[in-house]
Amino acid sequence: MKTYLATIVASAFLAAGSLAAADAKAIYVKDCQKCHGADGKGQTTMGKKLKVKDWTDAQVQSKFTDEEAIKTIKEGKKEGDKTRMKAYKDLYSDQEVKDLVAYIRKFAKK
Ligand code: HEC
Image 1: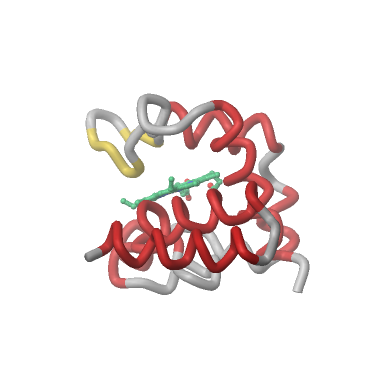
Image 2 (image 1 turned 30 degrees about the vertical axis):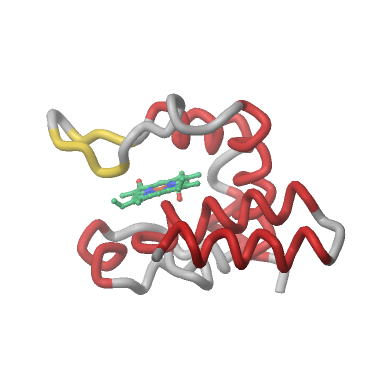
């Protein structure tokens, strides 16, 4: 069902002619939203528990560079032995990771 929904979202965006955004959005909805929230604020059950940052806050966004964001997505986030966010490097290509960062950046520009 989740894959099905992601496909619908992807096709809708494909129709709008924005390939990169479509991929990033589909990935975000499928893999990131449960912690970081549909609106990037992280106000989900998981997001609150893990205290993820509010990406609509420009100050928060200015605290990490694109390179750091890419690294976090690829390597994940750990605190001691505990995984806070898993590594996505085996799931997504470099281009997809870059598109995800661009997608995340848009949350602050509203
Ligand atoms: C299990 C919950 C969870 C999921 C799922 C998750 N993240 Fe995270 N993410 C976190 C946590 C926790 C942090 C660290 C926040 C901190 O250090 O305060 C983080 C940090 C980040 C950061 C670094 C910038 C920041 O806010 O600290 C980026 C970029 C990021 N996540 C992107 C993603 C992307 C893209 C996905 C989907 C592919 C994703 N995350 C999925 C929990 C998650």
